[in-house]
Length: 211
Length: 342
Image (cartoon, rainbow over all chains, first blue to last red):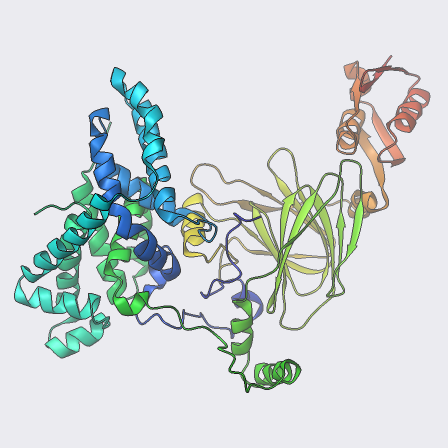
């Protein structure tokens, strides 16, 4: 039953209880400061992804790019990998998230390659050696991960002033958007647009090492 | 074939959704839109998850505050519990909410083919497993949660205040405060729930997408407030739950129950099968659940004959003998089968 949904420790509202105990209102995680209840996964899982997967995304992309002659798009694989990881019922048993992410991506690649009509002849031989790469991060991987952090900082610094201020307040200082709107004397709508823009930039650059 | 969206376009949509949900709660329309967007392509959920993770600030990533940090000078456990109970009675259910976050110890009970197991539970309730069945218990402070993994189970539920008894299966969820009911996952993908006493709320599983979203949120799907699908089933009633078809949630419908039918159906708790006018084909199918051996009806004429009577569920030979005598048929053993023929 290890893979059963981890429902019992979920600090979220339980709609069933509303039937038998109508006075029992929705509960929210004690540390959530924004109305995340519509996000289709738990804050807990988002934190897990941020802590255990994001740091390896750059390495994962580098590895995927080295196989791109197989005819798949690394971005597609990364997005599908995140989808699988976020939809997984339980991640508590994953001891090595990096290896797990690589293996998940590998399974996505396999499927994409099998689905594609034309499989390069080299692909068949190469697929069998894919797994061997999933060991520990190489020194290059660690170094370039550091480098790309700097790239991201540079990118954020290049944002238009208002966008940068709003985004830094949200992402670095952890202020809720409402509070940012108050401090910047902007409408909440405008702040949301700034956050979207900053986040889009981060999503584009992060892990890709693009300039 | 539709044009595939680029990863960049997906990222743009995902970041806009994440920023919006970060700003405020979605409207009902937006929620529907988001569901549709997520359903359109698996990459959408991935991009959404990634964008959400990217937006987390250092403060969000700090270790979550541990509930009940338990300083050493704390009162002994038993008096703390009393305090908790007092708090619960005064402040309603806030304290129970905390209890519900404690991960439950899970325990699975299974029965072999042909076996009927009676399992007394700690809360005073009784669980009875029919042949080849499995139920997993995941009790928490505020809820007695069980999963019907396979087969059929009878639940005799002792009321415990503020602690509903909830049974889940892939098709439906039942909830009761007390009473007796029987839930069965049939081989044909249909689930039946028969209520002997008390009231049981039955809700069909939501659509696969809603289910995925709930699972991903760790919320699991549960009875939704005001859900049109939730029905209240009283003693003597039976409902069936079937998959609703592509993209739809389960459908719950009431079944006509003949007087005495529920009691007969529940004879399995004593290891017996009771028939009243079933065809031999139906009876043979029932016996098949309790044994690795099979009863084979060699002719349609025999298969359509009706039978009444009480039989030991595991005694296929006794049943075959009774049929042979009652319908002047013959029978022979062939490997694992007992073949009845004219």
